[in-house]
Image (cartoon, rainbow, N blue to C red; front, side, top):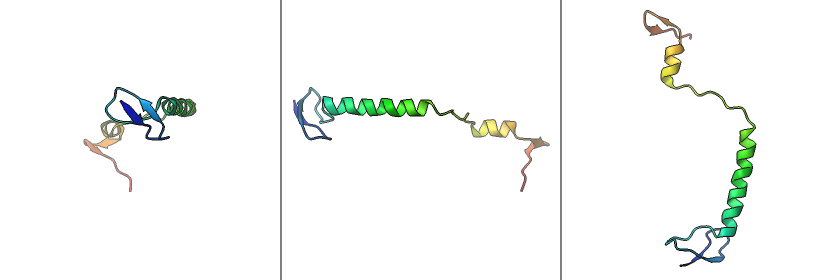
Length: 69
């Protein structure tokens, strides 16, 4: 099927029923995503705790959390 690229409006042929990016724009998007992944990979990640883990690790008195105000 003949489609127009949703980004650059060039025509391309594809078997998909819906229009998407042409192969050129798709490769550009992949390069941008790879660059972003490289930048993010250098940043240290913070460990994420669930609310249950925070509750389990919190100090407790008689089974209740100690809350400082």
